[in-house]
Image (cartoon, rainbow, N blue to C red; front, side, top):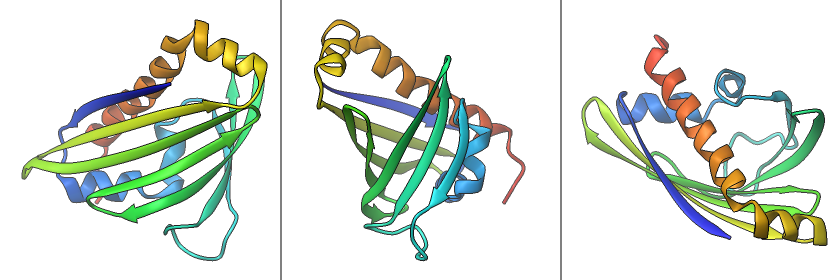
Length: 148
């Protein structure tokens, strides 16, 4: 399953990237995030992994983020792996003008077990909806942020 989402953030590109690229800021815009753990001594770059724990409804989900391309401020790609699902995500950013940033998020979901294949087949909008929630939450956080 593949889809693309776009959002305009009313902040300059460099501020959007600084907020987005700081793991400490994730708790402000990723609903359900319980914790994160960087699994490398390196800063965020290609190949670095992070363990993320979320509460989604009554379930706790753990996933591993692996950065597959790191070319900020232009873009960043990563995979997110959890039981039965791999989300391959490519994010591209560009300045619309000095105060606005355009973010494109291309997503591909690969399902590795029967249950997740059923969910992907019968509930594809749920995946897109969750991705959209994160984009909108980031926009709200970034536009309110007085940092930087």
